[in-house]
Image (tube, rainbow, N blue to C red; front, top):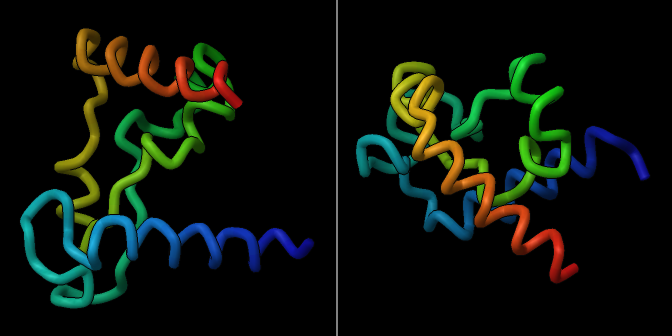
Length: 97
């Protein structure tokens, strides 16, 4: 399967999950430009190495946002307790699969 098609499918699925609403400001994801998905735990090299692709690219680590400004608001970078809680939640789901 084409990688770009998989990304497109994922975006559509997650936009629908979030009801086309920005998880940072509550506006429509179409209100400020190009809708995008934000990583709650950033997809930095450090976090990818520490938690792996399964966590960083998991649906629960993604949120629909309406702009780069809101993308930055979604990040929990440096908030260790929130990161630990989210990683535990995702790993629990991954273990079930």
